[in-house]
Image (cartoon, rainbow, N blue to C red; front, side, top):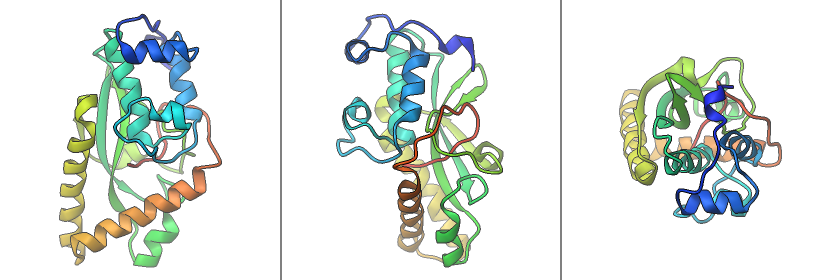
Length: 205
């Protein structure tokens, strides 16, 4: 883990103040805590702190909070990245049964993580597969935390629409398959949080 991520959370904004109130005074300690939270969508998607309040989060909500906190501390070089990759059982354990039932090996997925000095850091906290999602990347996009939800949705829908056309599916059927994969992933991992990963761990919403 890069020592550049182990910076002090100085009081520069409301998110940082709330995180410090919860007992975190260094970024890496917060990131490790976030990684250990169970995988699942929080109910309040607009609240950056929802993952701490509800003690659960997906890659989007975990890394959105981390990037926003880093930026409030003046570390804008910590980038929030949306990576589109070919999600399979090999790089995202738990989705294989759903994909195989539909007759596919993979489907485009949008995964969020941090990047600093060209090094990727994944604090989603899911179990690693036999290969890394990063080895199946289709594209990467640096996103402002406040615009993550809309930008990620647009990028992901475009990727799934293109894949659906090539695969002989309607967009709605392709997206339903993707949602079924994420539901399977959440069911497999919601009660099994894992440790911090700084390379290859799972995806999603």
